[in-house]
Image (cartoon, rainbow, N blue to C red):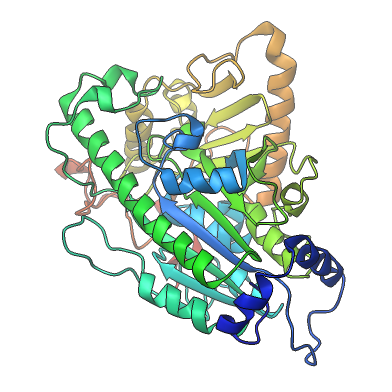
Amino acid sequence: MGLFINNRLIYLVISMVPAIFIIGCMDQYLSASVTDDERNIDIRPNIIFYLADDQDYTDYGFSGNEKVNTSAIDRLAKEGMVFSNTFTGQAICAPSRSQLFTGKYPIRNGTFANHTPTKPEIISVTKKMRQLGYEVVLAGKSHVKPANVYDWDQEWTSIPKAGVPRDYIPLEEIEEYFLTAEKPFVMFIASKYPHGKYFTVENPKSENLEFYPHDEHLKNNPDYISKRAGYYRSIQEDNTQLESVLNMVDRNLGDNTLFIYSSDHGVSGKFTVKDIGLKVPLVARWPGLIRANSHSEQLIHFTDVLPTFIEIAGGKPDKNLDGESFLPLLKGVNKPIHQYVYGVSTNQNIINTHVFPSRMIRDNRYKYIRNFNALDVLSENLTNRKSVNIFLRLGAEKHPDTAFEELYDLKSDPFEKINLIDAPHLQETVQRLKGELFSWMTKQGDFLDERMGNVPLLLSPTFKLDQNNPLRKNKLKPENLNILKEEDYLKIEHWLQKD
């Protein structure tokens, strides 16, 4: 829609204007000032970003899984552009979302463990888009803090609904906003699906599920089949929610609306730096600008979302953001956005007590991973403090088959099964990727580097390694409880501040 005189009336007008004319006007507008108070017509688009929760990029009809119901997303794919190489920098909830909202990777923005805050000085999407004349709205799941960084113009939480395992997105509030908005807006609609707790499915059968190299060994496991069937049913429920939102958009907003669908990360690779965790679906529809049924294989990243929105709004993305605008791709210009994308894993959080940090870099074909506390280098990480060594050892022993270094050819091995780190013909590739990774880590201000014996324990009030938590899966032995001192930890100062 984008013309904010009267939402109901202007739909009739805009529907008679060719979309290509709107886009032509918008291109001219992108080079003009957005601070002219005398303007009474704003032709910039509304922007809606729908975010699913914990859904693998493989589990969509448009990506080849015909056993799961994703008809609404498949419709978007036919009406817009599918990005087949989109990544988040961390396969866990809060760190992934913080990248979308800040344009910065997890270490730089400060949210690199779940349930931890972003650095208080970060300027997020709320202030950046507000400065450009947009309202910024969150509907549904938040999972980010503090409030001074994420100061939404409006925010509606998820709504309890009978007979389903998770709360629903606030559909009534969303439609009311569509009808009454007086400014162009960015709205993040954050679903709680298909994240567990899943539906219960009666008599689940393996033949109704799709299996991949990472889980095909579980196709005869009754517990896994039951859980996976419930996950598919939860995907179907989210598809129902998305369908309702799309109908609202088509009914109330018209064509000049950019609609993006994604998932925060994959569930099968959660907490890891494998592609099944870091690779995410991304589908964008913008009638008249994005060519229907189109496709891009360019590497893009969640940190690119904010710069893209800023450019669409007529602003100039900050140079200190990690992301780059992919607006050219939306316009059909097939140009590289990144040569490399990066990922991090922390594993010191509420659910896990083990210390096993990882970093990864990948280009269009190869991926290099460094697992800093792998079992084969544990002896080099041990310190002169017995209590610290207990938790370093727990972390390394939790992953006995994971090597210190990994290299994968993603063209022939997309599920990362064959480690090529010692392949003679790929040593130049290893050195190139390793050099780029550590250069990036330095720029990010990472607490890890190439040195051995530099794996810290992280101190946060929300998860202490030597204390059990109701959500923690692996309970500590009594002799390992409350044995760490404050000086045993690396303090992340902004984690320790009160909201």
